[in-house]
Image 1: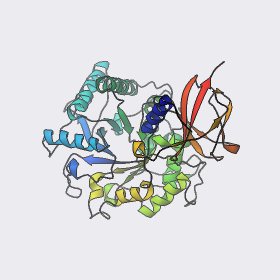
Image 2 (image 1 turned 120 degrees about the vertical axis):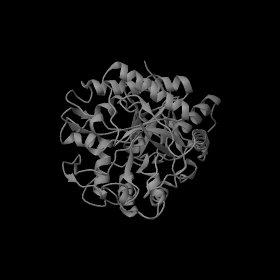
Image 3 (image 1 turned 45 degrees about the vertical axis):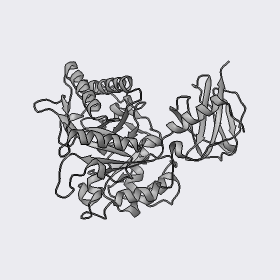
Image 4 (image 1 turned 180 degrees about the vertical axis):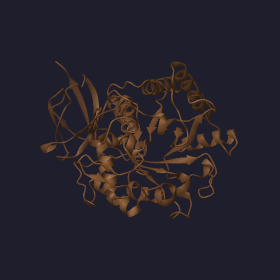
Amino acid sequence: MRLSIASLLLLSTITAAAQGPDLIGYWHNWNDGSAPYLELSEVDPRYTVIEVSFAVPMPGTTYDMTFSPAETAPATFIADVATLQAQGKKVLISIGGANATVHLDSDAERDQFVSSILGILDTYGFDGIDIDLEGASVAITGGTIAAPTDARIIRLIDAVHNIADQFEVQNGVPMMLTMAPETAYVQGGQSAYGGIWGAYLPIIDALRDRLDILQVQLYNSGSMYGIDGAIYTQGTADFIVSQTEALLQGFQTGGGFFAPLPPEKVAIGLPACPLAAGGGYVTPAVLAQAVDYLRGTGPQPDNYQRVATYPTLRGLMTWSINWDAVSTCASADEFAQAYEDLFGGISTGLSEPKVEVARLWPSPATAGSVVHLNGLAAGEQVLLRDASGRLLHTIAAKVHGTIQVPEDLPAGQYLIHAAYDRLAWRLSVVRY
């Protein structure tokens, strides 16, 4: 099939924007005798997203954020960030952590929070921010997921929108945004909605279009409900599968329904080794059982029965890069190796082999109509993207490789591609 120049540009734009698997790790900005300080240049090259921990409030405030490298000269640190970025990696600044209280009690505090974070991003050249707020930093007293009423929550949402908008204006590219809440703040909303329980859900929901990766900490956790109504315990394949699928299927809470996230935005967060957390560690073998089952490439490992398969799951997150590097907790680089064993065979981005553009009919199609994608099997997932590469929908194919064009899709040119496959289809939509 011969493509026009415009079609080739559309295809390469969307292929470049397609997100493949990532290994996300938190990097300690301090020296711990059990998990020593590492220079950024010493980070295992398999990590693709490095979360620098942490930006914290200036003494006496809960909103004026600061960061400086603890054991590296600032100029060297900045150069190391740039080197990692030149290798195709993302380097983010993580905000908060377990020991820092961050809350915005006035519009002036919100504005100073925005200004201070933008200053950190600009000084060190970070690609974006990770929100890792815990304890009193994030709590809810009322409202719903869709309509929060707590002023601190509303100001935090507004602040992140403002930071992202200004970052894009200043840098010409979107800001990367990740979040790493504990289970109580997310899946815990199934048990109760108030205090810390479900407290992240309004934040995630309001920022879901900007969010790149949600990496819930499946560790330091009590037992949690799955969407099947059963209770699961950390440190098991069942816990990993049940809590991950809750994000991918959505769930009901006292604050309303939490709508599912696409698998491209969900990573599994685990400790790198037993000493890295108070619980939740699993061996690479147990992790492989859970991930293979979620992605549809392995059998059911335990009691939880998944609803669907998720071949485009974003990847793995760990606390932490420093713990993964030591050999006194588990095997050195055990987590990075587990990631490579599970996801390493998948190449992404412009380095991929050429995508084969297959036939689609009818063409053009209308919004709401059914189209046939040649070469697609029933049940396979496809990703629908616009001309800018933005993911619009994840769609499961029906019988004979057909999909329904979303009813709300405007007229225009789109690209559909099979998850981690070499097949793509050009879709032209008209409206009458």
